[in-house]
Length: 342
Image (cartoon, rainbow, N blue to C red; front, side, top):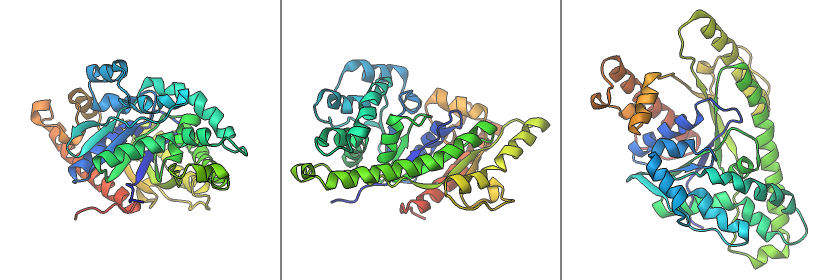
């Protein structure tokens, strides 16, 4: 068995925490640091795909009908009893590739929902186990095509069947968090959910391996479903007004304890703030207008130039962003044992 690249999923069941933008910028940063990157969009909203590709290109992928053109097109035959199609990855740069998302992916939810209980039966387990491992099969196929060093996966903000199977395909999980009441409550769901999904998937692997069907299908390799959480990233509040900053600090300072209690299943260490918390990989700045500027030019904010409008204070912010994302990329690489050049 050849060594496979680490699969890192950016996960939070609350939206609006900057998850997709964070992944997008880290994908570009790893590519700039000479790593071959596969970005995978498993969110039916396809926001990551929209960051990488222009609308005309996305429409062509969705309407063209080419087998494997998107994640959904690669797994669609499973819904009719067929097999997975090899995905067609999109080349963004020589070091960065995208496995595009598809709004039609939501149609796979029902298949995955029924496959989950069916996979614990006494017989006829091949089809449900193949469905549950479909994302992993597609990801590994795409990664092998480009000899990826790392795979970064974006998922939607929910705890549904699609995300459960996306996490089954995951080695490592990064939690992007906002500093507000709703993010804190969402955090309390994440740890128990990941532990439950991990445990139930391991039971399904064991059940499969104990059945005669497993010997009849030796070619079907299954993911480990490790789902090891490497830490969290906290979004910094961007408005310099007294009340919003006070509110930000109130909720941000409760994240370290909530993270330990619910995600790590450990006792809280009172008095920690995110910037001082070893589990906090970064406090990401709010880059304001640079974000929209980057989206307009389909490039990360740290690659913006004066020709894109990044002049004056914007130019300084571009350099600051480059430093911050490079440092974060190296921290994550250390957590997942991804070798990086000094």
